[in-house]
Image (tube, rainbow, N blue to C red; front, side, top):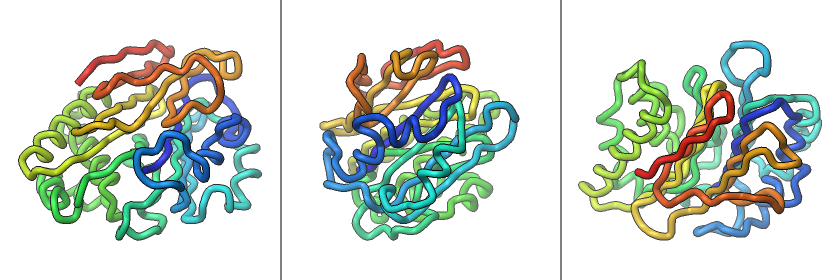
Amino acid sequence: MCRLLGYFGASVPLDQLLYKPEHSLIQQSYQPREMTAGLLNADGFGVGWYHPQRDVEPFVYKNTLPIWNDINLPSLSRYVESGCVLASVRSATAGIPVDLSNCQPFQSEKILGIHNGFINNFRQSLYRPIRELLSDKVYQSIQGTTDSEHIFALLVNELVENPQASITDALGRSLNILSNLGEKYQTDFSANLILSNGQEMVAARYASRDPVPSLYWLRDDVLFPDAVLIASEPLFDGNWISFCDRSILTVAHDLTIETHNL
């Protein structure tokens, strides 16, 4: 399973998020504490961020190397600053290639998304049923082979078909579709997700069976005032709050937080 990180708030250098915390995403790549499957997250990584002043599509940096082996990321992360960041380190499902198209974040115009979890026996269970629900445009936008990208495609499809829908509503409907498909085709899944359009951040902790993978949030910590962090595992000692099982959390532009159960 992957490890996720979302940051929304005052603009900070990427290295303050990726490297400086005592249990940073770097450390979680080789020494995770709360993974329910796998031991390492060494099958690539990705970081996505939004420009703090310009209304443009987000920027993404990916590599198939383990995050600790990328010699460019330390310098890049000291240079880049953002108030909206999504990052992921990957533990690939057996049989799914380690290549750039399968590294997260996934992007659709201004939407970025990252996923931790799985669809059991994805190629044999929900691969075709998910694709059959997608519009031609969304279907053709899928570049990789992961269950993660197909879950992201479900959300994008909801936004395409319902342009006035919020990310929160689209995510709730996508998880409901996934639940119905899982029940129909008798397969389990877990879907912890973090999504953003640069103006808000939305996250879900969800699985069709126990245990539900861990996900936490933290607001206005002394190390990160005026900000909300969301992470698979706490990055440092603090007042981290565990997501309720099967719930969605929305962080608005003014850092107002709303949660609801699914």
